Length: 88
Image 1 (cartoon, rainbow, N blue to C red):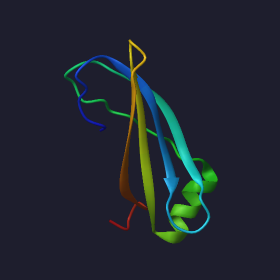
Image 2 (cartoon, helix red, strand yellow):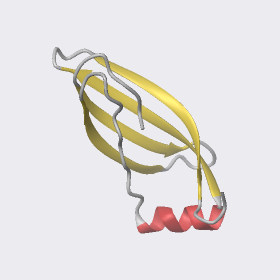
Image 3 (cartoon, rainbow, N blue to C red):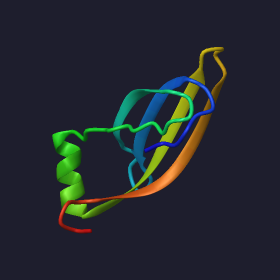
Image 4 (cartoon, rainbow, N blue to C red):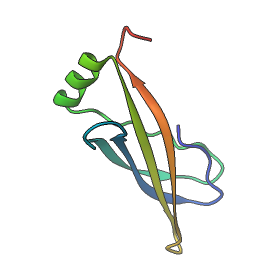
């Protein structure tokens, strides 16, 4: 769940690791309607799911780049921790 937008927007959400070798875990495009939260799902590749299972938790940086209809863009970054299933 990204949050609400004041106006219609589209963009990209990217997940990257923050420690060790910088690895892109996944990225996906999204569209958001004004006033409603955008729900975005990123599916990890098999290799990245295996990495998460082995490490049990991975610190990631989620970068949201959104663009409105006029072409104005903004980027926001969040720090998150992905946890493997069964290790919550």
